[in-house]
Image (tube, rainbow, N blue to C red; front, side):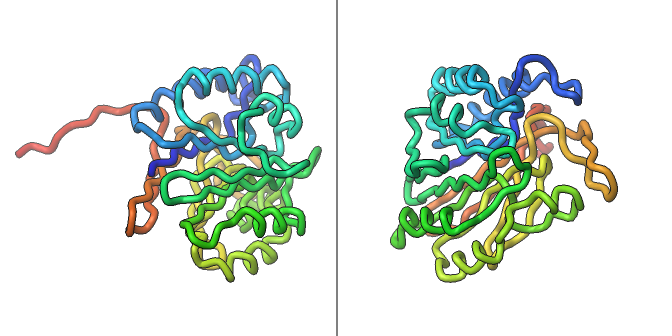
Length: 254
């Protein structure tokens, strides 16, 4: 099983304030991912920068044309109803939240909607916990995906708009050792940490990255990229970071 995790596309007409064309970055990411033969493209939130229905429709058409299986979940920049309407073929399994369960090989991927409409931060409430209880299998290897990290990342402003009630999620994980890892977005840079003893991996953005510094929130034009998660029978999950830009591959001399 191979999952390519893309995050924080921030698609909109024209360029972002960073000067980056998000659609050009998306096409570059899709071309780079296609060469990896993924079983699933996972997009962990902030698909649109503007929350416009036309943006989601254009992205859905692009993904259909790619021919790859894909799964999406919303982030704080997204508009939940428009996202669900454009991706009506997804396995939405909650009346209000944009949550879904996707089975890939021997893994079950649980996509958890943590967004609060109109607020940059996220939350893990009894509603999210009830959905996990209903859809988390006991007999399969499970991966959890969510937009907002349920832990601090060391960037002060972002830590104020993370996923609230992370202690509730940690308690839920404590009784489920078969949940092997957590995938997040939101931070616009690669961050590796843990929650309840599980690897927690935050994907970089396909556009600008957030600067690793104290003080005011700032962006940087560090290279964008994405994550690759490989699962093989009987082996631990392994993950790689890959930048969007290709580089020469040179064999070592014999």
